[in-house]
Structure formats: structure tokens, C-alpha cells
Amino acid sequence: MQEALERIKKQCENLIKECQSAEIDELATHLSYGKMLRSKLLLSISGINEDSVNLCAIIELIQTASLLHDDVIDESSIRRGKPSINASFGNKNAIMLGDTLYSKAFYELTKFDTAIAQSVANAVVRLSIGEISDVRLSSSFNTDKNRYLQMCKDKTAALIVAAAECGALLKGLDAQKYRIYGENLGIAFQIVDDILDITQDSSILGKPNMSDFKEGKTTLPYIFLYEHLNDNDRQILLSYFAKELNDAQIQWLKTEMEKCGAITMSIEQVKKYASQSLESIKDENNQKLESIIMQMLKREF
Ligand code: FPP
Ligand code: MG
Image (cartoon, rainbow, N blue to C red):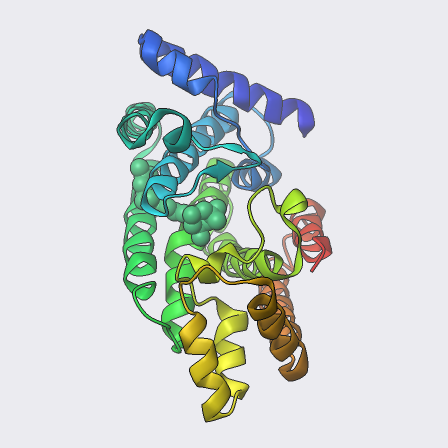
């Protein structure tokens, strides 16, 4: 698998070079590709061949483009432990690099069957809708779990669903089962991310700890916390929303979460989505997909 992931990175670099721009080439040297979950997933379903490697490169370019734009929107200065492109080169460069990668990816997508092109294109629509809803939800403390979950389905799960579906389409398998697998994996993955933002320190996260709430993101543990606080403590929680907090205030949040079991309840949700994911592919006899779920559960809470 590791060798295939290296081939995908190389293919991404080749596609970027084909854009024939020294400026884009220079900016792209500052990119990093992360865990490549979507590629691992696609290859685990389709197997490794020229088509699947090329399709993974397209999906990684789209994922990278979306994060370039997301860092501008979130005003994030760190991505995967390194300065973000917007922090180093400004918003204009980050947006245009994102647009270039995104457009090149769509050009390459026209070389695939319509069903595959539609699956990826539709996912990018959902991704964008998810990002808008993330921005809207961040304007005030959100107490609605369903809105939060819908946002996770769009912003995070959609491209994971497309990767799973495309893997199945390439291999002639029942795409619906893999879509369900991908959606539940995607939601679980986002909740794990939300938990880690609270429980892990910045050296492991590659970005500051507790940054979600400061950015106005009321993630699942905060919704559980709100539900379990009395009126007085709810007012304290609301007053901390989207602010730079001091150590005592951060400690208050962590202690109250511990008291009401907000993290434990969130972990239960992760396990629920993980088991729904496994259920959908139980007859497919694919151990790689089972191990992707296990690895996600093993990320330290
Ligand atoms: C990260 O969320 C953001 C996404 C997963 C999707 C962003 C999507 C867009 C900007 C629209 C699509 C645009 C293009 C060009 C394809 P996060 O902020 O919760 O995660 P983070 O902590 O990693 O920043
Ligand atoms: Mg972000």
C-alpha cells in the first residue's frame, strides 16, 4: 500500500507540472498530502492499477484544494504541523493554487466513465455545501445535533463516500454497500477529529489544541456538554464561545466534559457509526476495509 501511495503522490506532482506554471510548481512544493485516507480506501476496494492510482491522484488534488480554501476561510495558519499556504503566501495565492488543482483534477476526471465523474463531481458539491453550513453554524453556539451531523456528512463524509463508490465502480461491485460504508466511516472520522481537538496536545495534532471552539465550531462533545449543564453553567459555556480562552477557562471546559461524560458519549457515537460501517460490508469479505475502521478506532482519544 505504501508504495502505491508514493505512486499517487508522484502522479499528483506530474499533474501539477502539466499545468505548466513555475509559480504553481513553486507553491506546490509547500504542500503535504497527509494520511491519504480516501486513496487507501479506494485502493482497498478496487485494487492497485493504473486507473485506480490516477483516480486517487484526482481525489487527493481535490482534497488538497478544499483544504487550501478551508484554511483561508478558517484563517488557519498551520496545516499538518507546517505553516499553511495562506499564512506563508497570502490568501490570494492559496485560493488560486486551490482553483488550479481543483480544475486540473476535473479535467483529468473527464477521462473516466460518466458514473465515476458524476460521483466525484457530486461529492464536491456536497463538500462545498458542507463548508457553507460549517461557516453558518459557526456564527453562534449550535445546540442542534442533526445540523452538526448533516454538516459532517457533507463536509467530511461526501468525498470519502465518493472514494468508496469509485473503488466499487472500478471493480464492478455493489456501489451502494460501499457508499454506506464510506458515509458511516466519514462521520465517525470527523467525530474522532473533534474529540482529538480536545483531548490531544498540539504536538500530536499539528495545530493548536482546543482550536475548534475558538473558531466557533460547536462540535459533538460541546453539544453533549451543553445538554448536561444547568442554566447557570450553560451561560458560562456560551460566554466562552468563539473566544481566546485562558488556562483556567480551558480547564473548566475539560472538567465539565469529564463530569458529564461528553467525550465518552462522543466515543460511543464513533463506535456506533463504525459498527454501521462494518455491517454494510460484512458479506464483502474485505479485511482491508475492516482494518481501516479498526485503525480509525485506534487513533488515541
Ligand atoms: C476541513 O474542515 C474542510 C473540509 C473537509 C472541506 C472544505 C471544502 C471546501 C472549502 C469546498 C470545496 C472546494 C474545492 C475547491 C474542492 P475543518 O476546518 O473542520 O478541518 P481542519 O481542522 O482540518 O481545518
Ligand atoms: Mg479548517
